[in-house]
Image (cartoon, rainbow, N blue to C red; front, top):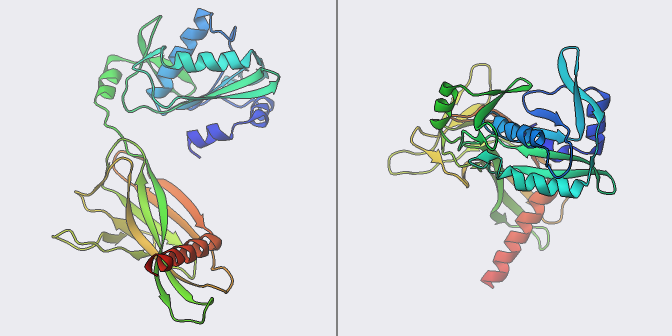
Length: 324
């Protein structure tokens, strides 16, 4: 599970489990308490600045506010609740200070309230890994921080130099598109439809995706077919097999890239369905996506038979009305 998904799932129940189980702080999780909701205490602001800087300059992370951490068996762990009074004011100050306490500001920081009673409870902050750093904690020390294990440490000169040369990274995900491929003959209201489920790779971040490859599996009776395209010099994507795998690895050419906020179709699954018959079987996709400057990611997606039928039938009927 990625950090953003984990942030979205954190609830009052989750925080209660953190405390009950003495959840350890780790590379992407930090527990914090504050003296007051207005951040008037200098130590509170200093700690927040250090945490923003450290998470953004590392792998990103989550701050759970209102949970006291203590050393248990040599590790910092969630110990007890110190709920924040004036939670709305606290959330407002978090938003304000996120852009003031580090330079340059960290893009994409999110906060949410987790109320327990009227305007009292916890808050959770999500700090993404940044590709425009390094980010300096401002106002007190003017230092850059980084996360290591469950601690933040001041960055050395070579760390800072390395970050200035950091290349923007892609963020890839699986995407699908359902497209009608034809209508075969059949009685009225019981026609047979052919459809294509295109499988693609989408890049949602600002780094170009280079040297991209994907391995795709689908459930029976479906099968994956590679796509062909013509560039003036070659046809299709390259394909090879990894040792120990029965599934072809689809490779983009070395000079092909997936640009930011764009996607590329790489494979398709053919299917047929009947207008009057029962729904087709769900298509279950599992894939592993690889690219330069990012860790391999394993993803899965289920395309429901109801979605296949609804989209194909509705698109065909729209085309028929348009052509009348």
